[in-house]
Length: 121
Image (cartoon, rainbow, N blue to C red; front, side, top):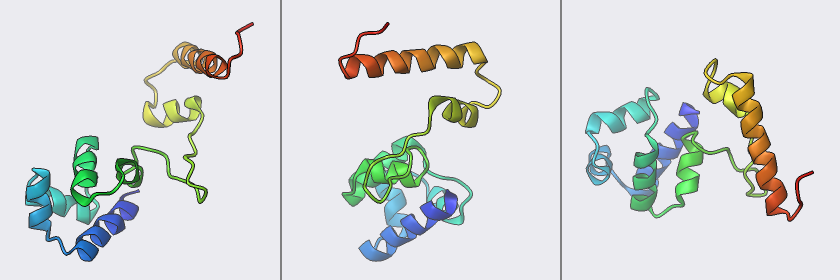
């Protein structure tokens, strides 16, 4: 994911004519922070992604996706969300036990039924 974000950020700097210093100043971060992003040592936090999106006048979802906070968009423009179990094992390895995962999956299923006007059995 870092390589994708590096290319994304380099493209913004190049096409918009921004320097690393200007970007750092506008986002309220240190020059070294932007340097670490460009070196692939870090990705910006969600707040910095939002600020970057606002500063560059691009959708926040695009920046958050490239930084790895949201799923990538498919060619159709739709987000492809992983199933919760897959997401939980990736995001919280060893932290959520099976009972918690099942409970959350049940809540998601209940929400989907309500959203589509189906009553639970």
